[in-house]
Length: 354
Image 1 (cartoon, rainbow, N blue to C red):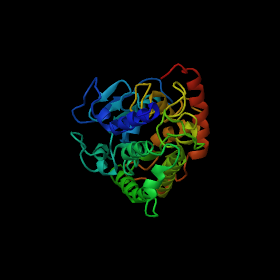
Image 2: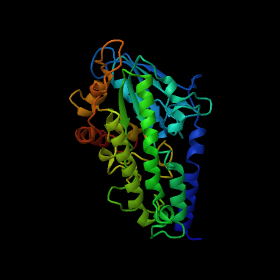
Image 3: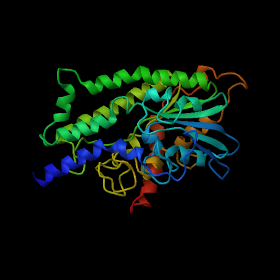
Image 4: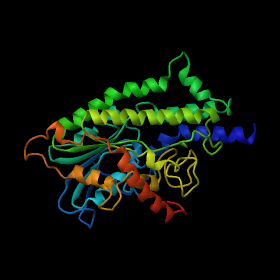
């Protein structure tokens, strides 16, 4: 077996172990209720009391293997983007129930010893961020399947052929099937936290936006990079549409993370490859990636304003917000530009690694 083939097989094995690694993260603290609670009182962005902020989501939210881990079962870091958001919104009480491996189903059902994520919401919740859907389309199995397929056809597009066998693109169909599930999550959030502003967070760029490959660092076949890139974009487009339909705010984290994908050099990349160089799970954001999904600290930043404005509840006391009072516009374009300038300057000062 050649060295290239061996490296691809090794990376495929690493992909299959992604969630096993997440489930065995050492923790510095283990909350008995499966939640990470933070009360911020420092000199964060803005002023005044913001109220209760609840973070829902999967491993892209929780930050597996990024130190310090505060929940071993969920791979949850105290440096994930909900924690950073809470730090920048002074007076915010954060309850972070994000958990590695979560699908939309885990919004309603227990995940291991952790209660359903939606149970963290209440009428006093003023801000909700939710990042979900990647595991509904089979994120982990897609990575292992595509890495394995590349062994026999490294220059072709075996993964695309696998998922399109029979004339139907099964990944496209999986994204479409996830849409009503996301709708149900957003409806449930509105029901349980009727006065909260809701922010749907998209997924960052995992692979080069150009569609170019980078074997063996990321062991997919050359022709599958563009296919998998398009699948990620399709998932984000679905999330943006569902957010708009639910009168929530959508935050595009893909556009500003282009060029910082798994193929980028250490210190430049914000998503670790299948053999990570930084303390992060394979094919997941590292500490810089979590920073990229948090709002900039500048009070003039449009991205910060989205979170800040969401946390300022202006609805009538004791009554639900009318649907029209929630932002119906996606924040994609203007927020991406604000975030790009913020994280570019951050990367410049941290090129030695996260």
